[in-house]
Length: 129
Image (cartoon, rainbow, N blue to C red; front, side, top):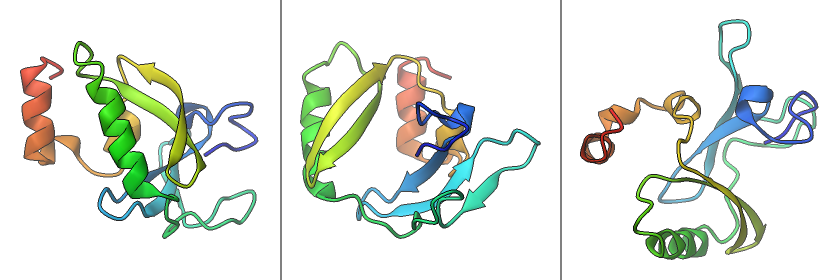
């Protein structure tokens, strides 16, 4: 999510916020900002707008998951891509870009990635770690 500091983009490393998504429900966790001063800043609401973050549900989450999985499956030669998308309508989205070397820091702040055996196997298989 963007902030005045990250404008005109929403980049986490430029002051935007990142929120984990519960993959089964599409609900967001708290937003977190990059630790410029050495500590992570967690927000249940957007620090500038006051809009709720934690607990919000991505509209049409099941359809977004299914369509994004199908889209990624059309590129088997690219097994490791960080897709940036924006939900435009419930269940619909636009792809902004695909990153061949996604920044794991933004994911790692929410939970240790290698604690998930599936992630560990994937990274090991593709020589990411």
